[in-house]
Image (cartoon, rainbow, N blue to C red; front, side, top):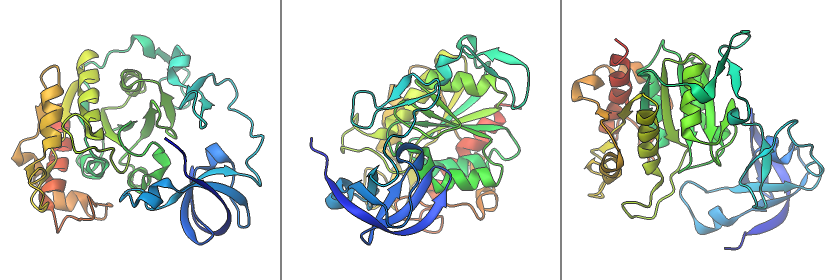
Length: 326
C-alpha cells in the first residue's frame, strides 16, 4: 500500500477559500489544506501525493499537497488538542474534539452550557444522504430552519473541499458544520456520529443533515460503498431518539441498471437500518426547481436538466424532514 509522492514547485495559486487552496504544482492541478500543511505561495517547494490522478480516479483528478518544505515544517499543534485524526499514520494530527469537552456553549456568545454527553435528540429530524450531491437540494427544502451539516466518512474527508457547503453557508441554508471520524475541517470535530448529532441538538439546530464528502468510496459491492454512511446516521439518530429520513437516490438518466430508478445504494441503506425510518413521498418534491434555483446541482456530471429525478428525490427528503416539525 505505497504512497505515490513527488517533489515539485508551486507554479500557480488559482483559488483560496477557508481551509482550501486550489493550486498548480509544475503545471498540474493540486489541492492543499493549509490548516494541515501551512500556507501555500508561489515558488514553494512541496511534496505532493499523485496517486489519485495517476490512477485516473473520477473524483480525484488532481494531486494533493502532502508537505510544504518551504513553510510547512515545525508547525505548532492545536493548543489543548489530544485526539488524533488518522492516528498512527503519516498524516496523524491532533485536533480538539467535542467529546473532549463535557460541556459546550448552547449558542454562539451565550453563557449557557449544555452537557452534550447526556443530550437526547427529542425527535429532531435527521436527513441521511448516501451521496454528497444530495446535500444542496435537501437544504433547499429546509430554508428558514437552523440546519447542521454532519460529514461522515465514505467520500472525501476534508470538509473544505465541498463547494456546495460554501455556497449553502453563503445563502444561510446551513448554520453549522461538524466533521466526524477521519473527516476534518468542520466548525467542530467529533469522534462519532452519535456525538455529532447530540452536539447539533444541544446547540439549538432544528434539523441535521448527514452526508459523505464529495466523491464516494466504492467497490461495486453491496456492502462496500461509502453510501452506507447513511445507514450509520439513521441508526445513530434512532438510538438517540431522533427521527431519521433516508434521502432516496433515484435516477432516470443513468444507463447502468443498478442506478436507474431506486439505486441499489438506497436499497442497501434501508436494509441495514435497525428501526423505522422515513422515506419521502413523491408529493414532497413539489416546487423543487424553484427552491433549488442557483444552487450548485451536479451529480456524476449531470445537472437537473439531465437527471431531474435525482434532485427532486433529494429535495423531497428535506421536505419530509421539515414536515416532521409541524
